[in-house]
Each structure stands twice: as structure tokens, then as C-alpha cells.
Length: 162
Image 1 (cartoon, helix red, strand yellow):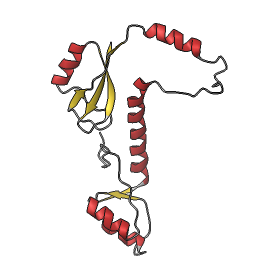
Image 2 (cartoon, one colour):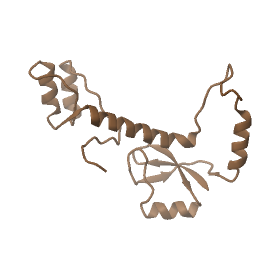
Image 3 (cartoon, rainbow, N blue to C red):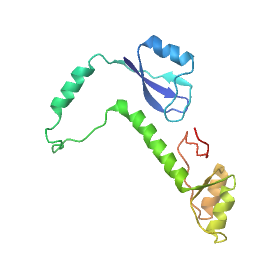
């Protein structure tokens, strides 16, 4: 196995694991490599020293020896996460975030600004909403004292199932 540091056109960084450099090139040319955060298929390799996974068993053995037998972290030490697990963890957390927002908000689509104003001024009952607004609309709402929260790049919250 070989691991490359990769980036999409939106500058999300992630690791890609491949059988070989040729396997990476083949998958990339066929459009099979995509960003785990946004699904972008414009992927490029970052400059890095590729890691070849030939000593995985040795690394596991060393890691086990270094752990405290009680499972507690000694004073002066801190817990860390293996960098190779971060992209998968990020994708999982973003998926959980999407599910939470979809389950707990009403999609008002392009009527977001109008609906938010009506709720703010007491014309309609307040509820959790989501929708689409331009940057200018967001600024106008903020000037009226209506706070909005933008979503991270690559997050699309429509009600379609995938």
C-alpha cells in the first residue's frame, strides 16, 4: 500500500490509500478519486514523502507496547489521533451534522430571508429553518439583528436521498 496526501480544488486535504502509484494514476484518470468532504473529483497530489505501508504489523506492535496498561494517559502526555483516520472521521462528523440539521429544520429554500424576517418581527411562529441566501442577503439580515449561520463548503442540505 502507498498513501498520498491529496487535495481537491476547494483545498480540502486528505489521504488516499492505493496499491501503487500506477493504481492511483489509473483511478485518477477514470475519475474514481474524489474528496471525502465535498465529492470534488478535481484531485491533485500534494508534495509529500509517500508512506508505504510495509511495516503495519511492526507499527501496531510498537503502538501496543507504548500504551499504558490501565488505558489512562500519564501526566504530561496527551491523546492523539492517527492522521490517517482524520479524513474518515471528518466525513463521518459532517454526515452526522447533515443528518441532525435535516432532522431538526424545515427547508424554506429561497424564501429563507423572508421567513427569517417574519419570525424575527413576530409575524409567524419561530421555528428552525434552513434555506439559501446570498452573501448580500445575509449581511442585510445581520444588520436587522437576525443572525444566520453559513454551512461549511461542500455541505448541501437538500431533502433528496442519496
